[in-house]
Length: 302
Image 1 (cartoon, rainbow, N blue to C red):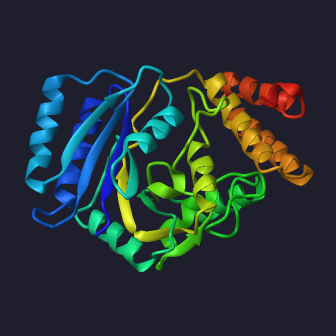
Image 2: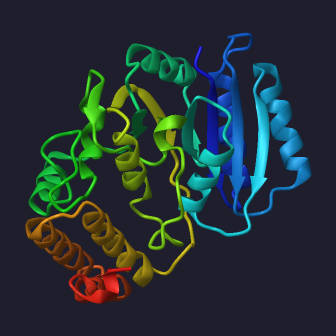
């Protein structure tokens, strides 16, 4: 049977983490024969008492709990460290603010058994969906591809908002970071990336791209989880908007994309700016403008 490392990259969210670990325990029936561990990679400082309580929650399942506190913060660096120290054949990355249904782990292992060539398997976040009007708007602004397993022309992942409509497992070129897993061999040897600092938007797209070199990626729509999307105060709105565009520029450059994709990203960015004007979100607009100016300059080359 496949062994599993369930990795939770976290920072200062004890209540979210407690809820997530409780759902993991409920999703893994006792005496199932599954060799699994829960691996917490922390950018904060969880207490010994808290960790002891989580170990007790997991004890009936036979899962062990391992804890690693990082000195240098950042989500991509947490992914790098996870791949370095995880013991399982498969690494399941979960956000700390998700809840698993009772059949999640069973469905995940079965999917890998059904698709032995898979480099990774991902799932769906409940509640993540677009209306018909929202889908049309995202298609016209190049935030979404018309094909459910594809990135848009500008490299955006908006097609995941229609994944809930799928009835069968399908091939994809990207995962949603809150609900993605990889064979360890497919992502072994990850390195720090200079442009993935602080607000790490697009790190799940880069990780998916790396894994794709080893084999196909699949989305199983039965792998549903609840993503609470707890608020975060990592960065101000100007910086978030700026990095939202800049990181996609780096992804396009990493792919050696042609001019058409950059033009599409310009169009997407202009749309995002227009969307913020009625809300008078001047900080976000300033960030998008700054990214547009940098798009074809040396500032984006690092």
